[in-house]
Length: 166
Image 1 (tube, helix red, strand yellow):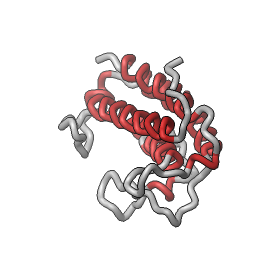
Image 2 (cartoon, rainbow, N blue to C red):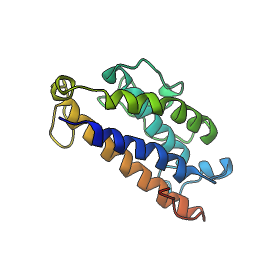
Image 3 (cartoon, rainbow, N blue to C red):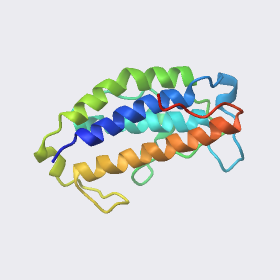
């Protein structure tokens, strides 16, 4: 099993996450298109938290300092907290700092997973009905693509240009 294509996808998402937030002012970060749509600040924190949340599964021990704002340990898995207007979320600057300090180790750890680890069955499934580690990581790349796409639409809503792939 080759994990390299999935590791490359996470490396691409690392870059796109930065690109989609480039030029966004902190004053724009909490602006919502409607009450039913999350703002960039929440989505960026949610994605960053997701990467940190799976650190133990890939041999890392890092913890997102804002985890409690995005996770509810009393909720059923995956335990995500919905956006809450009364919560003060970390700034985009702080989220980007966390994302960029952790992502190199995250991508490297994934790229080093061996066949036994990748084929190991996990105690939970994914929406793609695959309980293996490689299936789970494949789903996570989809999760990141989905949210980066949302952020790209919000970026345009805020009057900014399209996200760069460079």
